[in-house]
Image 1 (cartoon, rainbow, N blue to C red):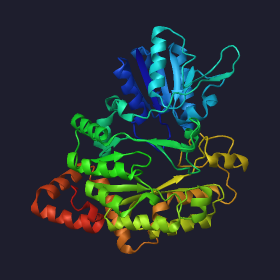
Image 2: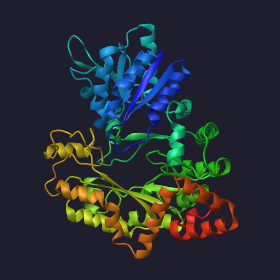
Image 3: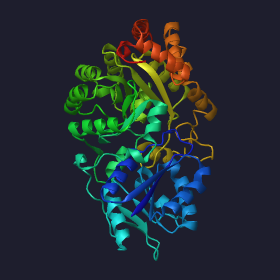
Image 4: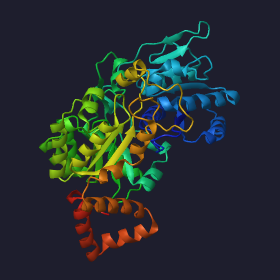
Length: 490
């Protein structure tokens, strides 16, 4: 059977045409003998082209993955598809899972929603459709009864405990090589779930649909992970300095797993990588094994440098001492960090944002700063707070970009002030830094732009292939980036 997946990503902060969830479901379908195609829907003007492609492909099933801000685009495209091409349309993803009714309103062209994990559910649905058999009883399916218009929500399949049983993601259906060429990263996602209960994250709500207190963490075996990395490296062309990006919610969660991974990775792969961590998880031992294995960047979210916002509003449960210690450890072991923050939360004031900036300025090892504007996702604790306090706007503007604008009416934080802090975040941090640090940051940013040009390629060739160039690289990497980069190619 022919299946066509669409990844809506319009006016989004994501901006990369790869979706690990769709890639995993697609690989399962291919393994069962089905034909799959994927489109990246990043511009509303692509509607006609995608519809034509679906018709030419003769897709029997079209599937969308959606977050809340993309749901309207998925419904729009579904409506356009149904006008000229009779097929079964299904939606999945976080928003469809947490608010299936919003995808199945009376005017929706979407036939059903799949909630929870999709590999087994989509495969079972496809096989029923292929045989012309009834699908309405299948697990993980939500649909609206045509006679009564009642929403029917079926039971769930158990979570997949043995992730090794899944085939490797079908990266070839996406412009994966182009992502590598343009961004110098290769993307991987191995493990599932997060045990923490942060107030802004939908992980808790996703766990609740399985009657769990949190989104239970499940791990692939280290051996399977290493095999997938090797399989990907053999399939695509990577430069020596291409960084492998491990996007798991908390890559460093399990001490035994990460230690085993780092040992085997260093032996079998030996490439630079970056991953995610959390302040309360960082220890001397974890930092040491990450550094030894080739970790060049650790994304360790601060979320807010203001203690009240971080712990009482966001429910992060990370005290100030633990936060500072984690960045000190990374600095000690030469691991650069990407520290991200969120602003525009309920109860936040300008003074609290200024406090957050000052706190971030004092943290060591940070070479990259990220900033997001808070979005109250469906199912989260803070979504409920925003609704109860009457902070939600009545509609989303057409030019709204998730995490780059606010849909809240905050009494103590005017929107123009919020956008000022968002647009000037790094410069506001740098004003607290010494001149030496400001210059180093400017040089790093300059090189990240130049290295992607033809002129940058020539400089890299000289630096990496001459004695004088190598000596220059060693010096500049140590003193402008950090000692962690001293052995890397430029």
